[in-house]
Length: 318
Image (cartoon, rainbow, N blue to C red):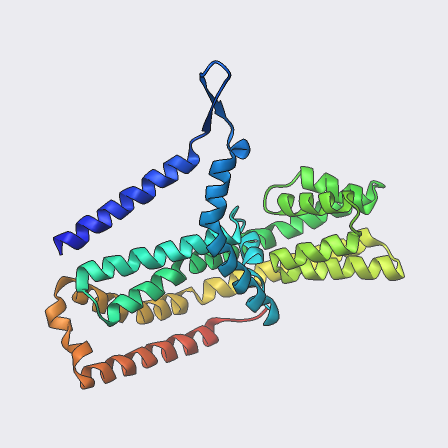
């Protein structure tokens, strides 16, 4: 066991030193032999090393994106954009692999080689994507709360005589993120030649907001058949405000039921994990005996079924 700990510590130190070495600027010698610091982009050797390190993860990221695209879902890059994470897909895959190795090593040092070693690795691999999903939900909730005020500003700008691109630019400069970021990107895409409907549709795909999809659909219909766009946006803003108000009321009324669902779901799992970490010999019989394994499977299925029914009861689509 001490040998394994020593090797793990040496490996961690080596990764840390390599990271610092990649981050340092390169050095070159001038004609008189003095060393000159060069910026990172011009450092051929460092850039090549980064490409070599990143190449296998780029292949994994490309395969994952192709599989997701074939299944009709979002690619890994689109997931990162929707979560507003400034990471490349290959860098995110690298983080996933690092979490997998870290959790697996911790499980190996604590419990030895066994089923928990595999479970810890799988859980560690899934943790970064769960964080991405959390960031997506938080950003989408904030964006939907900003939409009514954004529509009011856009409607007032159109009433003042501005065209739709000018109104979008004005709103982008007078609102906060994430609406300001998305509208600014729409303006940049329009400035390089993209059509307004296409830029707005790309914004809807990036954000995944149903309310924003309704707005973009209304703008597209108005562009085809005509009408008072300012009045249309005012009506949509009123509808979205009512939906937000109803969602808030439903959330307040179902808060206790949702909390009970999480307590019922997480309490047995947390107690089992605490017992397993504190006294592994006391809880090990549940994994070694067939009856214990069967009871764990039955308990897990019961917990998932209870959580599923509680979520179906308290979730309302407005």
